Length: 186
Image (cartoon, rainbow, N blue to C red; front, top):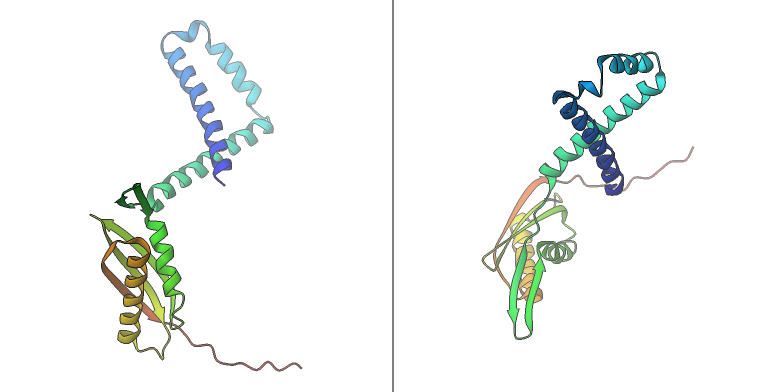
């Protein structure tokens, strides 16, 4: 998808460059080169020609697409942070995505906690973890979450050597249980 968006961006940039050059040349006395008669002739050539209408519509749609992509990029871009540790042999950088993977590895083993979304912040060498998820109706929430927090803290600290400062857990709702359904075939 990025290749397609980049290609669209290049095409739109070229068209904007051409339009900008035209405006600059015309405003600086370029009417000697581009007369009003020439512009009227071009307008008459375009009038009634569906090919130009399709090209114009395509440019409009591409522009709208790039506007939407631009707005999404600004809103959804997650900043990757790194946990930097120094060793005798050099520097080790562990990304926040790596820590998210470690957290998800532990949380996936808890069958009573579902649909967990993980966020990690790294501040001054400490890891802060935010979890949001759902639980089964039969779950003892305080006991299960305490066990989950302990296991995540232990796993992340053992794997990265960093200190886990805090693990916040938000339980957003209780999941619906799936009952055994017997299908009757007619």
